[in-house]
Image 1 (cartoon, rainbow, N blue to C red):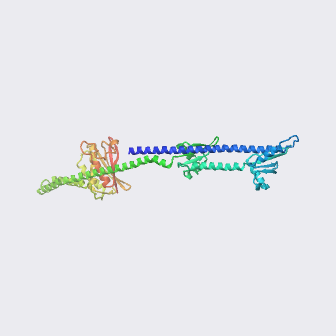
Image 2 (cartoon, one colour; image 1 turned 135 degrees about the horizontal axis):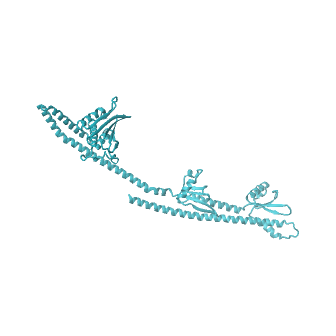
Image 3 (cartoon, one colour; image 1 turned 90 degrees about the horizontal axis):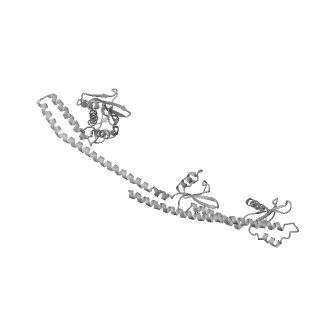
Length: 482
């Protein structure tokens, strides 16, 4: 498993490095194209300046041609050539009241319509500041102009180039989620390979911050001193591959848990078979001498010997019969019948009491007005009560009080068995029902484990340590369904 995880990690790192190289190569190409866009923008600034100079030269030529000074003797041929050489920049000459005097380089349909010329004048005034021509006194004319047709076409090409750049950014070949923002890093200009609902929210700062935490943004200079940013994440495939070792580890862990569960179930089944086999073998071994004892009892009764001895001997034989029946029921589904728990417990206590120290005080507490009926198998349930009582007597070392409280809560009947013995330490409280647990020098430590099996597996109830204090005593509680 570790080798598989190690190899998977190597593959993920290799793919991650390859994808990183692709992103860097793509980013380098984008930056080169951005440099081209930036250069084109600078070129347009120069062209715009050159066209402004052409208009200023055109204005200066008009000034000289219209100079009223008689001593001024200009080269009219040269000046006329300057005026007529402007064949690209659209211009309109108008007075202070915007009465159009002349125009140049405009479409013939526009030139023939005064309204069209006025509209063009408004457009020109909104685009560039008009150039003033002073004649004499307060008389002034103004030259309005706009970009030449060639310049406009180049601008259109430039706009297409910028749009192409943005399209290439958002539909990149490496297929990573990408966002293209302005210089403030808050306004998204374009995006690609990402859910549109994520970028159409009013506040996208969280998304941008998340992408920036994964990878440093790529700075793109479209205009001098003006930067836009490209944010990107690892591709979905790489993200999946990154988590693949964890998923693989989880799947292997699940298989290990299933294997452990199956192994535990197998061991538990094997232990159950040992329990059942040992119990049935014990019942079988007891059967032979028990049959012989019963025959001897009938012989003694027929000869008319001491009848008191016969009665006691018969009790012990019946007791052995009960024990044999208990062992024979282990591993089989016992028959449960409704019984009054007061009577069942009282019968078990009477048997224990007659065979215990006189210094043990027995008491059974219950509400006499109530009847506590539960589905039980009497031989097995009495076995549990006897085990709890014997453990309590051993814990008290033959001196103390043994109390059984019977009551109900909801749909359950509870039986509390309390003693005033040594108690159980906190560290051992959870292990008292495990096979082999014992504090006595003799015994196999199977009594409480067997009791738990009888109550929980055969009677669908519960048995647990309700409370215990070292040096003060212990209370076990049994819960049975009504």
